[in-house]
Length: 96
Image (cartoon, one colour):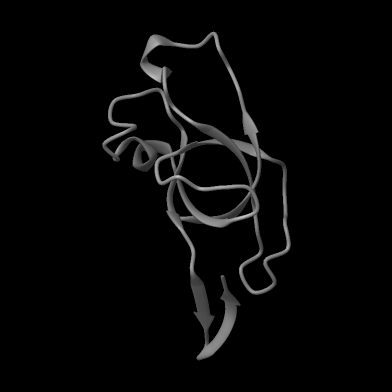
């Protein structure tokens, strides 16, 4: 799984029929201990109703096609959870 922050959205009126009605968001992977963004923005299918600025859990590859919304769809990255808190080595590192 990948921890990322929602940084924007993607609108595409012309797309594969199998992608109609799917919400696409831009996410940027974050360094878990610091939550600082690293890398380039990626497009992810939102399966949980995530919003701008939220810290989310993403899956990629074949795992991204294992949700009800993405099953057998041409998806390579999906948001599967919104993070409420994180703890590392007994210490809170993030709280929504």
